[in-house]
Image (cartoon, rainbow, N blue to C red; front, top):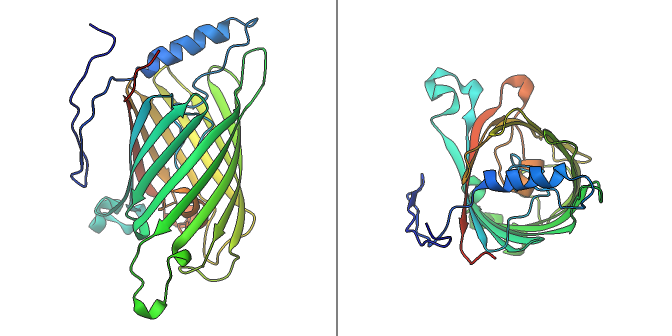
Length: 299
């Protein structure tokens, strides 16, 4: 079988959006095995690969960068709260969704765009890795993120909402480390600016938070994940987002199953617009599907 083979790929999503791409599947297991071999050589300062299975853990970004010439098609789903009971099938009768496309531009640079049904937002981001963890070298990976979202929700003429009012920007620093073949952690200080606060009361236009991410591998295919963002300041009625999940790596796909109190799936909505309370059972089942395509020749 030739190294570069063209395929016609069709993917049917909940919104009946079809994607056709000329692509080659990226085998994440081969990447993982290469990383294991490199880490076995303690004398070589080789880059550490697969600190996390994906560029996101649940909602939060990780220090992982998509490989150059690759596209990651992502489908994120969050169902309604479990405490709605059997009438709503414990939240499964309703869902919020985000569709996104991420692109690897170089070994340290990636960009992404997406659209979520939550307040009908479009979002885009740039992520750059400043430091790459190496065996026998740098003990951590460091990446920075710049993101922006534009809310197209119809507030009505009486609200007098301008285009600038609908914009939110986020800046984030990520410091992560693969402590062992099985354990990875990350800390993510984050700054978010709302041009105008429209859906909440109290709080400030400038919000600060710190994210804590952790992954524990339990097999070659499966890991257990936890994600928590502590808010230094917040809007009235919001909660700190906390998520627990499982990653299942099948080679070309990563399936992420989780429970979370967050409805939003981009940077600012997930961190600062979470109103669900774990103590009141206001938690949601959700999943992310990540499918990686090669859209350019790989050396």
